[in-house]
Image (tube, rainbow, N blue to C red; front, side, top):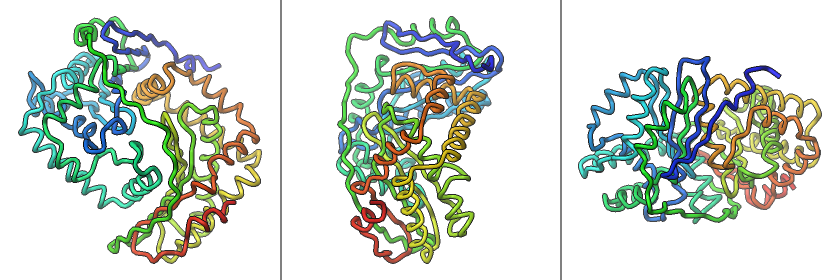
Length: 430
């Protein structure tokens, strides 16, 4: 075994406040990636408060009890690294990537914006305007928009189907009291995972974290959601200014914790997850019908979906769809070859091992694994699982994913309906 693959030089602590702390010490690097992972994202929101988690993610950078917006910006610039945040459906992250000598400055800043944001009425209104512009930007970005429309149609009336940004209507109506209430319900230390990876030791960080997060008597608000039920659909949304048709073809997937997740990753790699994938080789390299074609698998705590995205000239739409459906049917009926299985395993193992070179990737992986599994998987353990996948496993996962009863299509662009129906999709893969 390569000596640097023994990566779990990691400590896990749960502080009296309930904060979970994961610290991985890598003495051979000069940087530290550190971040807070909030066990709360857009899926916890009530329908009328859609977009509140993302609104909060923006607002905490607008100022704290002791720092103005410009103070925060100045510190971020002085750090010279990367300080950022993102909101997901199930969790929200605030993180930094800095030189090891700047770790306490970065930790102090991240903690300050989490613990004591000021939420002034003026900041809320200026940031509301920024977020409304961000929503408009998605409208002008067809490859993002087609995915939003697909998921909202695939999982309608479900928290995972709603847009993370919210809508112009919901963001326009979010008041200061609702935002503060959402903050108090979710930003609780027992609801937070802190992760750090790099040239840093637990004794540097834990005393600071214990002081910053005193024990609280109140428990965090926890909202659970059930597994979504796919809604089979075929939708064409006209957007006449577009030169291409953007399409998202998707079907039922696996939740994050499903035992079949490694087989699903290999299935996806073979279908459209790389340059040697079936879809890329046939649709782009052989027939020249697209510039972009790709597939991906999104898994959540409950439920998941597999999706193929492509963009093409309207005249090529029928052919792109026909090839995609044909390859999905072939994998479902005939599985994949031994060579494809071996190549996909090499691809996945390469991605896993190369990601170990990045402290940011390691830190974010720690946060995700704690959130979804409550434990850490070593790279060796993950690679063993990848190596153990058999052709029979691929057949089983293909039978789940290439599902005639959930296969759905969203199209966006200046095109006529290509005559596709839910029934014709079912027949194409069945």
